[in-house]
Image (cartoon, rainbow, N blue to C red; front, side, top):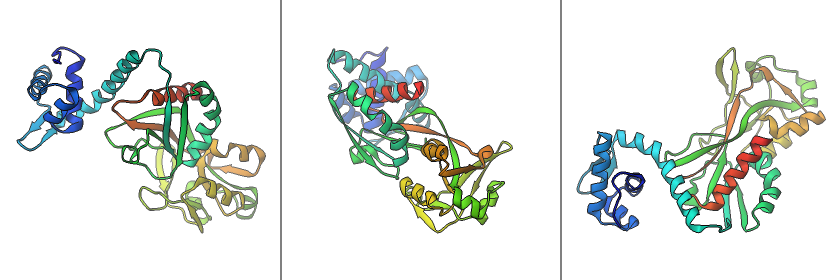
Length: 300
């Protein structure tokens, strides 16, 4: 195999060397000689006009310019490689077990309502869903993808926004509101019992975010009940244990039924839902799942 020095192959070699942090390892993976890989990188650096790698006898590392370039091109190289692989597979049906990790609220709001339709559309795909509150290393844990309400991910992950931006909601049972009253401003929550979320990432209670008069603010609330599980927190709110902080879509059924009352709507912020996955060799089963979610959530 030779390397085309004027096309997609140069970028493929660049991403492979960056991922494996070595010319020899990249050569083995690509099925070419180490000198061919080295020559391709020199050609790409000449086209770019900057050095992309710092090389020593023991290590190969991206330069600052190389890091920036890698973040831009790696996701596209992965998608193009997957597209070529699909062409080679012809009319083969997506199949296999799709292993996903997500929070309970993400599963309840987005995956569970669409699960039946997806499984009917792709009868050769199985779903294996793990409910976890922490941000998971999907590669190390063997997952195909994760879904979280945060874009703070490792740089070697691709983050795909799903659906509309989710508005947060401060809610409490009608009984609690009748007993303790309605906060007129976010700081009023400091005198209320609040149901706290334990962040599995930081180990601390999550602060509640608000936006008022164009300014963002965070409130460190307190209360007697805390959990890392949204279902447990919701149960506590319904029992009148205090105000809780959820995505409005997660509690819309209880709001509509009058079991929960929403307050501070004018300063509740919005947050995106993201699906994230490793940027190399995206399997066909994952791509059709992403396309299905995006299509259904957009139509919704």
